Length: 304
Ligand SMILES: NC(=O)C1=CN([C@@H]2O[C@H](COP(=O)(O)OP(=O)(O)OC[C@H]3O[C@@H](n4cnc5c(N)ncnc54)[C@H](OP(=O)(O)O)[C@@H]3O)[C@@H](O)[C@H]2O)C=CC1
Ligand SMILES: CC(C)=CCC[C@@H](C)[C@H]1CC[C@H]2C3=C(CC[C@]12C)[C@@]1(C)CCC(=O)C[C@@H]1CC3
Image (tube, rainbow, N blue to C red; front, side, top):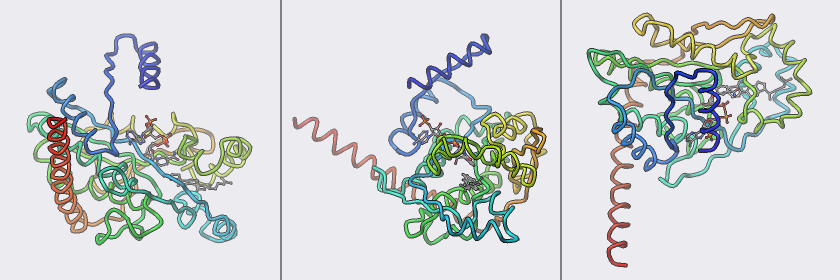
């Protein structure tokens, strides 16, 4: 919680009248999500905005050969914008027996939304969910037969594509109850995530090249401030005016101007509804396993 305390102090310095509460939440653990949701429900009776930003890309491997091949192809701009064909990851199982990337980037958020539905679905009041997705989300990385991406090498791309579909399904099912969901892409931003792909000193050295590339692809936002453009822009919009099938991209022009642009997502209603019901089924399994585990713990505790 130390970094959270520091962020809170920084926020209160720039906005002294603000009220900033902290809460511990590991979206990669079902137990932690349920406990945090309980705490939220005890503290508040309404949620206006829920930003689902947490995400991981563990053990990323950059395909250097594909990078140089792409550099001299007609697909070069798309390669820099989406990293298509450039990245794979090695995923592990988490303590709930789920694939870690799926659990952190998608399922934990899904469970949180489910738990917070009473605060999010109030017909007389609009609540907003905003997912941080990615330009790396790709239909071909996702399979309905393997929603956790147990058998592939692109769990990150798969999980982000799944979040795009889940957002569409949530809009379809919950708009009538006052809940609106949107998806953003922050562009390529220098953060701990990108420092896991290449070391930070390397990114610093190639920064002039990245400013140059930005002239051709405005997706190189590079700083967290620029990357947050679409998050802020969405905050200012009326939910009814937003397109549930669009991903809102933070973009930065060659001259450094930030703006937000919607791009249609490559998703369809049927598949997104199927994913939604798969997630509901998985939720039942995870809840059952958790309550059995907790009952075992209690029984063992009483015996000792
Ligand atoms: N950087 C980029 O170029 C891009 C990033 N994104 C997305 O942006 C989002 C933010 O990533 P970014 O800032 O780049 O990466 P960082 O690794 O710098 O930050 C990741 C954030 O997610 C949080 N997080 C990770 N795992 C968990 C967990 N189990 N429970 C709770 N919080 C968790 C981290 O919290 P803590 O610090 O407490 O660990 C941290 O705030 C992610 O969803 C990522 O996929 C999308 C497109 C491009
Ligand atoms: C000269 C130069 C800029 C080299 C860097 C090559 C690659 C390491 C990057 C090119 C496109 C980047 C990219 C991402 C990571 C780094 C690159 C592959 C992301 C996958 C990071 C996380 C995302 O969600 C989307 C990004 C798309 C672009």
